[in-house]
Length: 336
Image 1 (cartoon, one colour):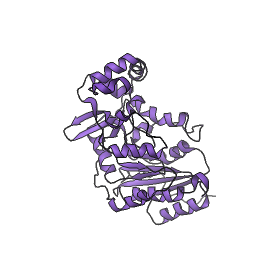
Image 2 (image 1 turned 90 degrees about the horizontal axis):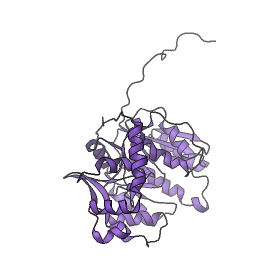
Image 3 (image 1 turned 120 degrees about the vertical axis):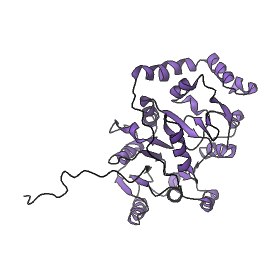
């Protein structure tokens, strides 16, 4: 039986006061073996996030089947109003957890991050600066990596192929680049030229960006997710990660990364330098919003830029010609 009229029926939801959403899926099923240090690293991740964002940022943590220790910790953050939303679920997979966090909000920018990311000061300022100055930017990463332009970047290379703004530029932060590859377990026997030059765009005298983006931490325009699937059939890896990489291309958005490094990947082993980072945290003060939305979806252009052009671009002699044309030092061309 129902008596009376629900006073909230037919009421419109007010526009969100937030400009930026952060979604972090968390899976820590125990405190042993691989996960021995994961709780300490999660705490550093969330603390560094809270310490470096502005007050118009909405923080969503998705507990993707973690144990009671983690669940209680996340609930305490929510109770203390340090985060805005905590979603508890069984282990449904990383991307499915992200999809849950995306639902129910209409916030212009959304950062999707792993739970072992250490956020550095000014990451939010630098990210929004790229969106403000590069209308076609759809994804902005904050951790430079090797040769990012080779993955899902056919459109940005195609669009700028004849522009002098697209060129190989000196690596801004070599130490951070080395630290990233140390964090994922690589030996240091990789091509040392990758530490010297990266493919980028010189937007103006004050801003350069790198072509491409990783996916362990990156910020997306929310309209990219206007039409998304509701389930991905993998817990991690496989096609689940490619899904996020390909979505921006369908709206002809570019995938970019900040020129300097604004986060560290911590991995699953705690190290003393991670704790030391607390001394340098400052909150963002960049409240920019209302970025360009690209409504064009041209299937023919998508095919030309992201299929046909990419296939031509993968031929060895065309790569060498491109490297020379875009001013990679001559001595590096043969093995880059």
